[in-house]
Length: 105
Length: 216
Image (tube, rainbow over all chains, first blue to last red; front, top):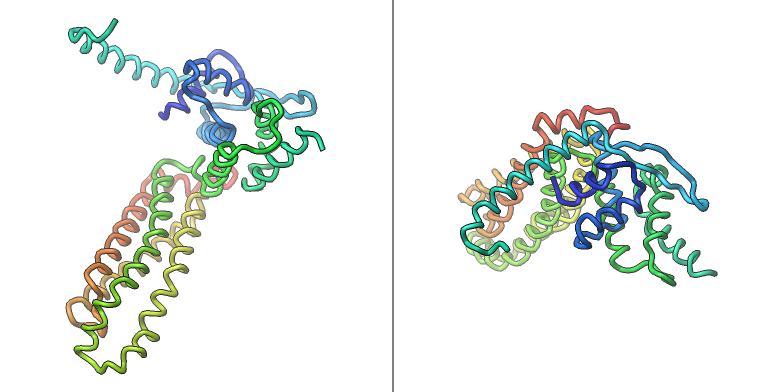
């Protein structure tokens, strides 16, 4: 799973979000490191919708503009959990092996 | 005209690059996000924004967002094949000098111009058409059209025949033996085609080609 995809799914893990909300959440989760642009975001959202990992929760019109809220599907939640567990296991293994070198503070 | 409406017009112009169906579904939504993320007093679409949107539009046109990984990789290879078609053409142009003396040695020098017209010029003229064909099939395969998969396999069949003819010509059976560089370039193109055929023939790809159009 690509990092941007992982972060988008993570942004939706604790509730629904609209496009701008996802961009802001991803920026916060990555501590400002990942700034999604609209073109990249909507290509990813289109793919995730086609794969059944996310779905449209509701639509609203705010100040005359369409705002569509997305949510994780059960399959999306499962995939995110599996990916998070995989990354966690890898990170734990790396940290364990780095411990003797003393580079970790 | 206000800054906002000028910027909106700019975004709409760039969004026009997206496929119509996608624009209908998500165009207004993306526009709202673009306007929300625009800088204070911004009047024009920034270069980075335009590049990102155009990249997204190209990916949408080539089905790169919805197609499964094997098809996406096959589409990339087909685009590479289009570029290689042009490289083959350039290789033929560059190696003309080495082909000509060999030909002149075996035949009448006066026949060179006839050969140029009859063999080489059609080859060179067909390269851009070939590149366009590879791109068109990349687009259609990305969109999951079953006919495009069959058409690409047929194209690969032609490519294989062309390579075999070049190989037999290089062994001295042809009228104009190709330069080694031409053969190598054609062989690379053939390998790219072979890899694309393998990818579009996988089970995952087959499921995609047999989906209802609304799901891809």
